[in-house]
Length: 405
Image 1 (spheres, rainbow, N blue to C red):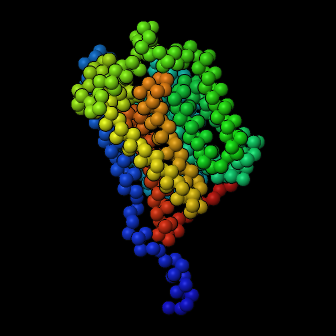
Image 2 (spheres, rainbow, N blue to C red):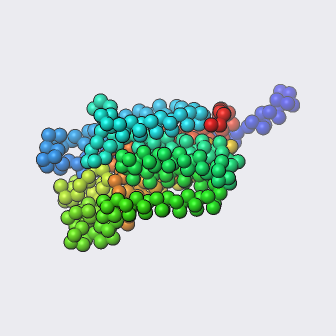
Image 3 (cartoon, helix red, strand yellow):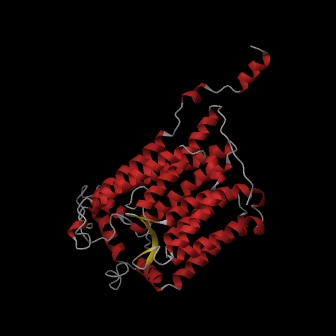
């Protein structure tokens, strides 16, 4: 072997430990799988009694559990496909995916196209299922904000060229989501965008300005919307006689359920509150059923699993950025922001720490669009991790570039 060949060999040599490591993070995979399985069990437990009521009398006891299992199967299928797609593909088409998501948000508002339920137009009927574009917008915003931050990195300290384009995009998205209306999806979508901008190094003054503007926006939406103001009043005094049977009804029964569970719960399947007392027990308030049946221990274990996922997201993101894959790293950390913020809001609502807001618990609650988009986001996170591990082995991972828009 020539001297040049020996030098090349020594430079490209990989530490022995890196050649034997897995292609994936085992603990991350276990945490995600545990939440999916746990969610399926709890959806079954929380929804089994719904068939006894007049609203769902024709659906059968296993209707929601079976549909949830189907949604998980579809999500796992798309998860597997997403794992095979290089991150360079998402970086290349991030802006187009964002435009597609905005188009879908517009279609939801078109009469005879979007489906209206309880005064809200949030769904597009596709055959036997209802697709929720606001969930797809979370994925689109994740990709768009990461790509935008990388593209505009040298302008992150500039108000006009760095901050304003993203602010205008957020205003358009916020307007479409508020027309549905879907304040919960707006809060999570904005959190994803602002979180990625902050992690990408936006000027601190601009960041504080953005937070201040968002606070003013949300306060204004509460003040000028009587039903939202009513929720705030109910949150402050849930057990007031005027709130117990009206705007604070869900919160009151959620607190009763969690209080009944105490430390170890009343036993899986033995919840009383799910027997037509707690509305939407299998969706937004599933943690109340967890608290009643499995107690503080059950809630704590769910929190630990989400903590693992969020921490792994930020660890994977830092590793990708350290290897000059800024887009990959911001996407990974954005997934952590998304799942962490949404889980925090859902749990905070169930515990009475936050005003009532309709948001599912990621990977756990019943909801087809939510589960599918959550799994696609986790697949992107694991793809980032896979590419990082390939680079650590010394294998080249293509990084495509495209012109800025």
